[in-house]
Length: 548
Ligand SMILES: Nc1ncnc2c1ncn2[C@@H]1O[C@H](COP(=O)(O)OP(=O)(O)OP(=O)(O)O)[C@@H](O)[C@H]1O
Image 1 (cartoon, rainbow, N blue to C red):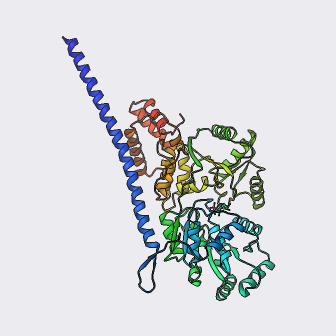
Image 2: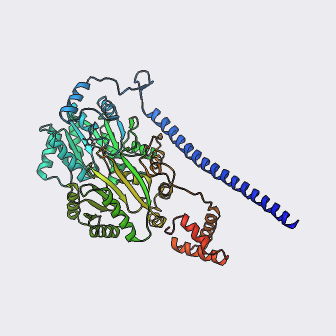
Image 3: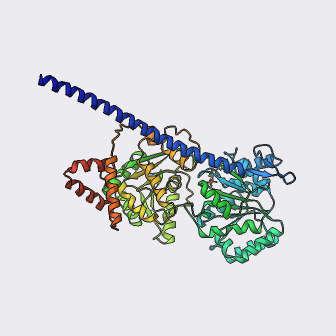
C-alpha cells in the first residue's frame, strides 16, 4: 500500500518536473525571441531615423519656386564621355564602382557632398577625377603625412600634376606652390595639405584666397572627415577649424569623405564643415571578402601566442602579410619577440619608437620583407597596403567602430581575408579604465563585448546594426554563420544577481576592487553560505572569467 503511494507520488513528481522543464524551455525560447525583437526594434528605429535625415538632406530647393528638387545623379550629364575617357586612359579603370559616378556628377554640378564609403571602396577617385575635368586646383585636406605622400606619388606616376604642402615641404617648393596659387603660373591640379596649414598658416590662407579670387579653386576635399567629430574614433583638434573653408569660399563645392560615420558623427561633421545643405552618399559598410571570427583567449600569455602562431603558420605562407593589434606597447614587443622565436617574421610598432624606426618597420612590411606588424592602435590610419590577408586582435578594441576600422585594414584588394579577435573577459577592465572618461565609452565597450560573447548572432549583423544599415546576407563569412556549434542554454540569473548585489554593497562602502578581487570575494561569500566551490566554478566557467 505504502509502496504504491510512493510510486504514485514519484510519478507525479516526474510529471511536474517534466512540465517545469517544458515551461523553462518555453521561457528560454520566449526570451530569445524577445532578444531578437529588441534588436529588430532598434535596427528599425535607426533606419527610420536615417531615412528621415537623408530625405531631408538630399533635397535641393528650387530658387524660384522654393520647392525641393530631388536630383537623379544617375542620369546622363554633358561630361559623361570625357569623364569615361579620363577614367580609362588616365586612371586605367574600366568602370565605376558603387556611387562613384553619382558622387562625381553631384560635385561637377556644384553641390556639396558627404561620402561614406568602406575602406578600399575608391573614395580618392571621387575628387581626383573631377580635378581633371575642371580647370583650377582641387585642395585636399588629409590628416597624415604618410597618406599624403602615397597619394602624391601615385598621382605623379599617373602624370597628374599633384603637390603637397606640409611641415616637410622645402622652402623652394613652398615658394613655387604659393606662386601657382597666387598667380596661376605653373602646373598644379591637386594640392594636398594637412589640417594644420588651414588652422595655423595665415599666409597659406591668403594665397588660397587669391587663388579663389582668380577663379582657380575648383573643389575642396576633406579626407578622413570623421576626424572632425569628437564622437568619431579619431578626433583631430585641427579638423575642428576646417569650417573656415566653407565660410571663406562658399561658392566652391566641398566633398567630405570617410569610411565610417554613425548618424551622430555625420551630423557633427556637417555642422563642423558648415555643410548645411548637401548631398549624402552612403555605401554599405559591408566588406563581403572579410571573414570575421572570435576565439576564446587562453588565460596564460604563452597559450595565446601559441594559438596565434598556429593560426598564421597553418593558414598562410610567408608572403601573406598580416597585422596583430595589442593593447600595450610592452605586449607588442613580447608578442613580436615570441612569434620570431617560433619562426614567424614579425616586428613591433608603437608610439614609443622614434619615427625612423617606425618608418623602417613599415617599409619592410609594405615591401613584403616582414610578414607581420605587431602594433598598438598607433599603427592606424594611413596604412595603404592592399593585400593584408589577416588582422588579429590580441585583445578586444574599445568599440565596434574602432574594431571595424582596425580589422578593415585587411583585404582592401577585395580578396578573401581573415579578421580574428581573441577575447577573454579579463581584458575588459584594462579597456574600461581607458574609456571611462569618454562620453559614450562604456556603452561602446558593452557593444563590442556583446559582439565578442555572442555565440549565435551573425558578426556582420552587428556592424549593420551599429551603423544603422539594413541587414545583408553574410554568406557564411563569419564563424557564427559558418560553423554549427553545440550550445547549451544555462540560466545564471541568480548568480548574476548575487554578483550585482555584492558590487552594489562595495560601491556603497566606496571600495575599489579589481575583477579578480571581486571573484575572490564572491567565492568566499558562497563558501560562507556552504554552497561549495563547484557552484561558483560553474558560473565562472560559463561567464568565461576563468579558462575552460
Ligand atoms: N572603379 C574602380 N574600379 C577598380 N578599382 C578602383 C576603382 N576605384 C578605385 N579603385 C582602386 O581601389 C583602390 C582603393 O581606392 P582608394 O585608395 O581610393 O580607397 P579608399 O576608399 O580611399 O580606401 P581607404 O579608406 O582604405 O583609404 C585603389 O587601388 C584604386 O585605384
